[in-house]
Length: 119
Image 1: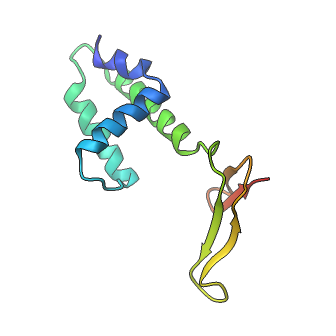
Image 2: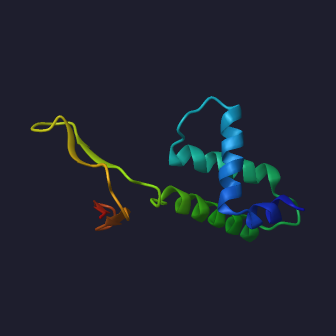
């Protein structure tokens, strides 16, 4: 199976496991979005075969990014929400809910507003 077909057919759980396996081999460091993009582009550049055209590589990158975003935004297991304010009058936790249900995160106003919806 070509690497392209393997990546396109991976489930979200398979991607998570592959990432976990690779992470265990490395010293853990949170990548910035730019670093993750550069790493993925370098990975694609090294693994694109001659018969694969750029459109296929772009499609693969889009699918990979969409799967990553879906995993990142999955709040189905979130049960605790905390808002931390590092200024007066709080200087710490401004809001806590240790029994949160149905947590949903939304960016609104072209990314200027973060809203958290919960029960």
